[in-house]
Image 1 (cartoon, one colour):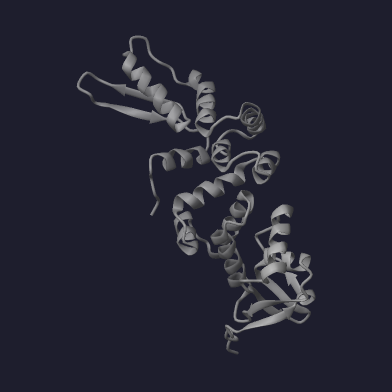
Image 2 (tube, rainbow, N blue to C red):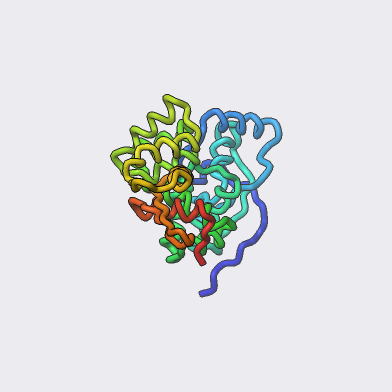
Length: 266
């Protein structure tokens, strides 16, 4: 049997026949922003249609849940929608995820979970996930690293108490240290750079400077350790031949180092 083709036609659908899709990536809706959108809808109506597909009980919402919720608050009985009965469950998930990413309407942890699910569905590496959604490999890697945050820290990130830049750094430290560093960020209002420096300082004892090593080499090691948030050791002979060692404590820390030096996997 051939799959149904999308009509592309916009029709008004009764709001009470619509239910959110089970695979929606978005779970958090800011109450104040929702009220503002509801007021806008009361004044001007729904500007962009939502996307649905038909079910025996009504319609499944694929994209536009925030608009649907705001339209309910605004007291609408119907709202414009495009029916996409041509989509499989996987395609429906991807459509909703991409729309939310384009609108930047997901929390950081929702984005991370959505990207992970996309990679699992199609067995995609980070670069391929990025191509699928129109983002860079680094974008994907940075968000997926957030899945290494402990639940209490992930909650702080979702609530906006900790910024994404801080979260990416915290994802690279051991689980048992994350909440303590999160508290440091909030109490001392640390910048991302400040956080990296403090974490690097606690690891300085891992960088052993040999007696007699020139001061400029020691300064270089400290600066690189701060920049990469990992212990760095530089050795060189009089001819200038040597090596640079970077010590990491997990694959997530390694991903962070690679991102900082601009490495892109192919």
